[in-house]
Structure formats: structure tokens, C-alpha cells
Image 1 (tube, helix red, strand yellow):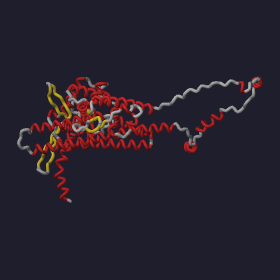
Image 2: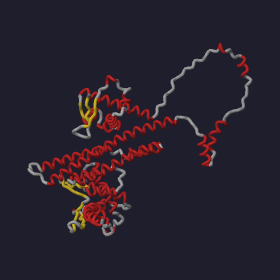
Image 3: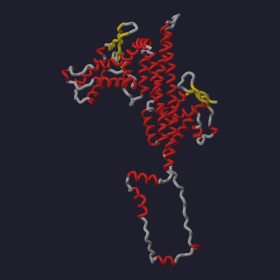
Image 4: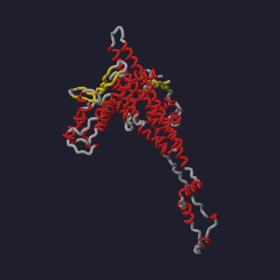
Amino acid sequence: MIETMQRDIVADHRERMLNLKKYYPFFKLTENNFSQFKDGMYENLDMGYILMAILRFFIEQNNVKEKDVTYPEYLDFMARMLRENFNQKLDDGQVREVSDYIFDKIRNEGRPFSFEYYDPIDRKKRASRVRIIESNIKDNTVWYSISAEAIEFYLDTKEIKDESRISVAQLLLEKMISSDDFKGGAVVVAKINDEVSNLKRQSDQVLKGLSLNLDEGVKSYREFMDTGMQWFDEEERLFKKNTELIEKALAKLNSDHEGQSQKTEAYYRTLKDIYELGDQLKIAMNRHTELLVSVTKMQKMTDQAIKNAKIRSLRSRVNFQTILKEMILADDAEVLSEFIKPVLGIKIRKRFVLKNLDEALTMRPLKMIKPEKVSFSESTEIVYDDELEEERIGDNYEFLMRNLYSALRVRDEFSKKEFDASMMAMYDENIIKNADYVTFFVNLWQDDGYLNKMLDSRIDEEEKIDFTLERSSEDSNDLIIRRV
């Protein structure tokens, strides 16, 4: 037992220290306060807060806008952040002065932060280096970007709610692939899989909530769609981008070793790491697609639950026992006034007016009375929101199916991506982002009868064309549509 413990301490120590190094720059920087800078003029500034704000700024630029940062852009961000977040009025010169000081500290004056630790295997001290900001020169301009260690630190220390955790993790994966850290990339993909599984659990909780309390369930459903699914297209784009990076890394590895009669051990080790990372990323992409299918089913069930609730609300019924219990608990009988008011409004006393005697005496027999013609107008049918929504979905599905049939009359086989490009060229580039466009192909792929049932009354049998869908062998994210 003691020998096993001792072996774990020695074997795991280096890995633990390397995991700790991403935290080292933060605590090193927070040791620096502003009390000794410019005679304490900026003493109320907090280095820890400023550092986290700068990390978020770089992630926004690198991930969302997909660009590196120039120093003037950094200065503009710092000017806005310092003036809005701290109770201190600074002119442009002071903003520049403080920003230069902070940037030098974060970049450690161009040198990496050196994190020293003891290696019990080799029995000597080692130094591990880490940077927060990386730089490169292009077109006579210095461009800055956040390092992979800084992104990982940000992910570990902040509960991300405003942006997609999957998208930010994929930015870290992109950095690791670019730096040939394929083993570290596999760890990031594991985090992505955990987040996809977490979203799946959230969708299951929403379904459970719908069965218990419709109002709360619908509220949870809308929150889930707003926060969990609004980044879906961005996540899909990053999955594709990282897949392409893996393919480029594999091609680069083979080109670097092309012509060598005997490959080195390092070559085969790197090749294995790249293939393992590619396989893990494919698993993550498949789970991501399964999540979309699950959410589509949840959307159908939510719409049906709302429809059923509206139908039930039209049934007039009053449970007097429940009303009585609520009055007793509230110790308030005011609700009884609503039952009594109609009775108090009835006029009990009746009088016969004498002048109506003449009318009674001159009243003609029934056979002499000409019957009045009464015309009945058709009652206006009430159309509910869910019926309008169902009609809209049906119209969109009919439109897409007719376009699909038109394409099959021209070509017997084509891919979904080719169909997407054709639709964007004919109509609008945003058509493939429409939710009905996505669910249309999900229903086609599932073939659960929902789509056929909806379109049976809209498209005649002689217009229909039989076709099949299958996943593309060349691109796992694409479908092949083939006429039967």
C-alpha cells in the first residue's frame, strides 16, 4: 500500500506541476499592485480584474471575429474598460500610460513566465515556461493573440454563461492543433463531449419539467433554446474548421517525412496521436448531431403540450370545493361576491302595462302571421397560435419538398451541401439558417412519418418522387440524396 502511494507521488508529480503552471502567471501578476506606480495615482485599479477582462477581450477577437489583435485595438478596449469599470476619470494620456504598464506586465516584458518545480524522477529542478499573450509580425504590423494556456486557465476559472462553452473549448483545441499538441487536444475534446452530454441532460430535464408544470416547463424550454442552442451553427462551423486543421496536420506530417525510407518512432507516435484526436472529434460531432435530433423531438413535444393545454383551457368547469378550501385558507370570502352579483341584478317585480290591452285584443291569429325569414351566417372559426405555427411549418416543408423534387428531376443524385448552395443561389443566403430548413432534413433522416403525414394533403401522389438519404462516405457531415 505504501509502495503504491509512493509510486503515485513520484510518477504523477510532473504532470500535476504542468497542470498548475497555467495558474502561475495570474498569481504572479496579482502580486503587483499599483501603489508604487506613479506614486499610487492608480491604486484603486485591480490587476486580477483587469487581467480577466483582457483574456475575455482576446477570446472575443480570436474566437468570434477570428482575427488577431493590434495594439491600437487593445488600447481602445482598455480606455473603455478603465473609464467604465473604475471610479476614476482618466484622459487619453493617462489611459495610454496605464495600458502600457499593464501590457508590459502581462507580456512579462516579452519573456515567458518561468515556473520552477522539482522532478522526483530525475531528481533535479526543472523550469516550465508559459505565456499569456503571443505575438507575430505580419505586413510590418505586430499582431497579438491569446495562448492556449491562457484559454485553458480562463475555462477553468470562469462559469461561462454568455457564450458557448463548446465554442470556446474549440478555440483552445484550434490552438493546440496549431502547436502540434495533439494529446492535449484529446483532453479538450473530452471536455467538449462532457458539455454536449450536459446539454442533453438539460433537454431531458426540460421534458420532465413539461410533464410536471407546463408554465415552468415552457419557461425552461425557452431559456434552454436561448442559452444552450443559439450557438449551434457556430459550434458546427468550428467542428468543421478543426477537422480541416487535423487533416492539414496529417498532410504536413506526411510531407515532412516524405522520401524517408524508414520513419522514426516520433513520426509514428505523432501519427497515432493525430488519428486518435480525429476519431475523438468525430465522436463529438456525432453526439452534437444527436443533440440536435433530441432538441427537435423536444420542440415537437413542447408544441403538442401547449396545444393540449389550450384545448383543456376551453372546457368550462368550476370546482366549488377547491374554491371553498382556498377561501378558508385565505380567510377571505370576497370571492363570493362574484357568485352573488348576478343574483342581485335580477328584477323580481313585474308589472302589466294597461296600454298593452289594445295590442292583445287586436292580435292576429298565428295563421295570419307572416313568418320572418332568418338568415344564418357561418360562424367564424377561431384559429389559435399553434395552428398558425403548424400551418407555417407545413407551408415551409411543402416549399422545400417541391424544390427537392425539382432538383431530383434534373439530377438523380446530389449532396445536401450542393442542394444548400443551390437554394442560397436561388433565394437567399440565410435560407439554410432557418429552423424549419434544419428540422426538415432531420425529419427526412429520421423517417418517422411526421413529414409524410403533414405533406400528404399538400402534394399529390403523381407529383412525388421516391428518393433515399444516406451519409456521405467522403464527408461525415454531409448527406447523399439519391432518386430511387
